[in-house]
Length: 286
Image (tube, rainbow, N blue to C red; front, side, top):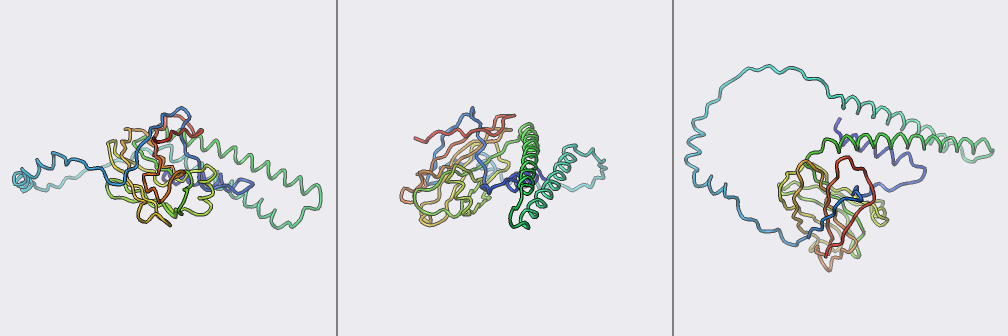
């Protein structure tokens, strides 16, 4: 079971166990004490000099091919022993079993409430109160599991990049956001009406999270929707820190198709080891 799948399942339970409907997106996890760095969204891809290594390979092409021709394949027989199972995987299975049990409890209680059309006695109201208490206990257990996962992920951090979108556009409808990494890999996240409402009220939409190389690179951000077909493509230059989680936040609060992609505000910050989710820190781009 991948850690990202487990985290998605935990977040899904937190949403389904709330008494009232909740937004499907979560707030951007920026520590209050984190240093936020403003970055520029450019219309054109920055020009970069070609690596001198390519010039060396081109100049010595015949020599390198001659060395490759001398390579010979030799079979080797090796034996690989079985390693001990990572205890974290067993712990993940236990957490998933608790999630399944909690979901079943919430589903049974919800079905029983829907079958009962009206509350005709004080005992019915007492049953609802007990059900709300049960949901509160489930939420407390869920918070403890999320804290355990947060400590696990932050404790063995690798070089990662997390791209989130916040805010609501001044004009023009944004139907989806696409992020293209320097190797050409693209990730597209479509916006539903629920997610748009969440962005208006301060929520955040995660477009991409994955491993990244700890070097300077260019990330392409594209907005797709009404009014953005000609001006909704821009580039951000950043350098993820080695063995840390780097956040790139794209703020749409001042975005307008008439002003183009340069009207977006973008900023980056690092997840401090052992830090949890707190209020978002931000800094306007000049």
